Image (cartoon, rainbow, N blue to C red; front, side, top):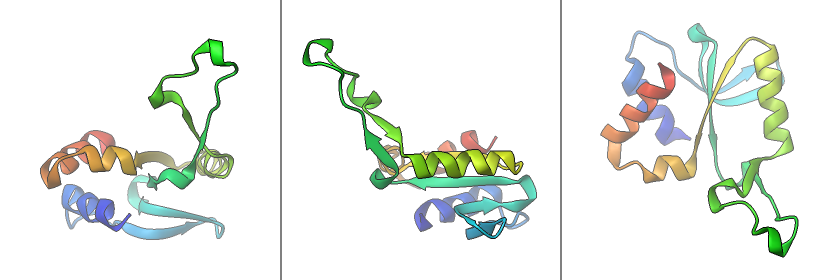
Length: 114
């Protein structure tokens, strides 16, 4: 998540604190935090998701983009963070690698953090 964190810093500038591996409530470790905004950004790789299986072969199953769901631990962590008053944002590794270079990545983060 260092590559995302670097671009977050470029987007928000030096006037705002950005913390990697930030511990909230002594038990929830988040990838990137903007404490003044009470916003966290989780960078989700493949291990944060579980595969959804089709109910039957004739059902055709969900489309490729819909075949994954956030795993239970990651979902619980986000619910807890929201209950503690934090805004939780997410970027998947897949989303990030589809963006072509720093400019597209920064534009994506500007929209996400707006």
